[in-house]
Length: 484
Image 1: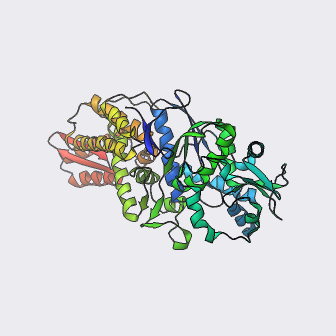
Image 2 (image 1 turned 90 degrees about the horizontal axis):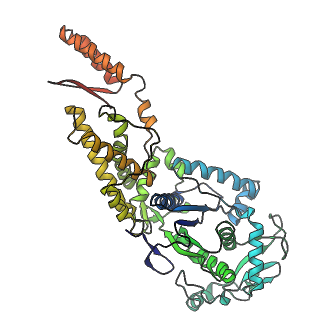
Image 3 (image 1 turned 90 degrees about the vertical axis):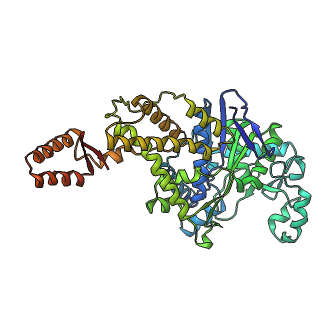
């Protein structure tokens, strides 16, 4: 059951072997904080959250770093429109990011470096590139000399000669930045300050870093020269991740990452999501409409992480129905555990080992096949739901209580790996008005009323319990009840 991953760099599936046995160093290119997070961010963050959870589940110690890009033209533009500052805009949307991700059940990363907090590392890396002949200053800017890095294009599969053939008619030779470059393919590592923009002092003059160098520096500062997994959206393969490789590996002479993993994009009703098309949906807008965050997680996990996914009302409705099935299974122990004689300890996290866990792991080990892993959860949840219905209607289950407890614990464990958690208190709070003992007492009162043929009182008690969400089932063996 070896874990194998599709590596964008090699374009094939490979066995997962870490730099340091038993430990994973993982970096995810996070968000540029100029607006609220949208469905594309939701997919990426859920996918890499579950990847991290799964690696921990199978025994790895994971150090997970996610950055914030807090220096960017879009942030500056928003600050200008709002008569604010880049820092204020970034801080506001970083706060919003954590609010949105908490609602989706995303575990926080071990660290969230920000470009503005990594300025020394950024400048140090640019200086090393310059000393090694991979970078050159030009009128306050510093550029990376792409042709100096012989392996440029190895991640994306693009060749400079092919790109050059289609680029000549798109180049504006009057552009001041173009005129500063020695080669059209060179990209900025440092940008000279423009009037009114925030700037940092550097050996090349006041300015700010380019986007690509920020991630190279943050990876190196937090995780070292070579990491195990570098993750991000497929839209970042070129030029961002390609440029990260060129920058980092030119200095260290070592692979930046052993495995490059990329999640597919999100479409809305078959079209690319964009504000101009009017189909741009933020996470908070979606959740504020009443969509269950766990249904969103399930929607994301029902697709293979590398493939595009289409967000439609029908898809969310299907995910919501699927979540209701899994949630019923997750709540089984809390609804019926006492009747079955279970002892349930809150926060109990003992390791579960059985054929279902082995099957789940064998499926998911094939390039994080979470959709396949979900089939195991649905099987367990449906079986528990069936047994719950039998218990309600017949007063006993077909399967032994011990086996049911093991099935339920397995479901809770595997759902936790996928970040699917039912809000137990929210479900039980609905019925806080009557305890089990109070319900049994009312049923006894009803029984006494029936024995004295006071059927009006009997019906009144039934209706009263029904209003509290309690359904009574009369049979030859007596009266059973369950919470709706």
